[in-house]
Image (cartoon, rainbow, N blue to C red):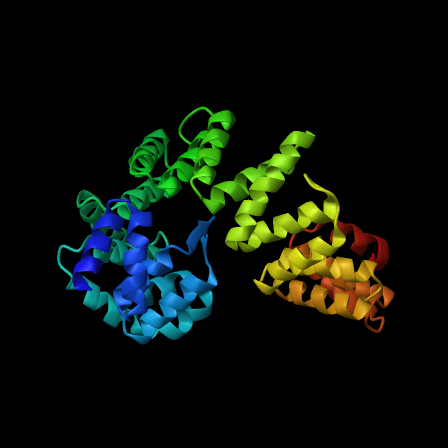
Length: 365
């Protein structure tokens, strides 16, 4: 198996991820923790500044951690809020172990991720160390480090030169057949980062990445088309949103529920909307938890609605706080309590909710 794992890593580093997957899968099932790390990468996706990874990816990471794998440990600690506190004490041990993996591009990339994530833009030495490690790994041909260098300059974003460098690295990743490179290039074109905005080119690139199975690209196109007034584009947006939702991304699942609830690109179907809102809510999406509460309120099931509004409000969602205030004000699913209604409206208003600010003026001025 060491030979098969070595072959799999070589393929993965070159960007031949599909070809590498069955080899990693075989090694991981036989108990190889390093293979478990690579298996987790197939279920991870960066959404904005946060990371999402599906249940299978989480399971592989946790199994790798149980076997003491530093790749799994550092990755889980950096990208999972739930696990971060429990794992942070072990980070120095994992870091030291990776630093002894001389001339290993994967170790360099994971270490760079550790330094750059822990620096938070403040520790210049850590940032430089992370950057140097990415350079060394990229020089060894690792596509993930090339992409991370693109992200580094993209985030730096101090001028056209930074975005040009970001685009150069993304193009290299895309040329290796990695759809994430295409996905990231699309943002530069669509929003005009370091260049004149070209929305048409951005959409073309997102569609190209989606055709290669990139869930984030599919979700982006679906979301943008959901604002269209053209029936054909709404229908196309629905199909892209469904593609992303089937991959398991909470935001895409919530967006799909919205499509069914409001009839965007498909027929209105409150039953299906409810099913998809429940899935998104179970995955922690506060907006869908609130929308599920709205449906229960419409059905006259106000105790269930109140519990959902409360859950969403406790996650910090301002609109849900407004609904919770309405429950207390009108006695929906709970005893009337003007003091509680006032407090939740103030919290919502403090988070910028215009509706809550108006309600405060109308009811508590």
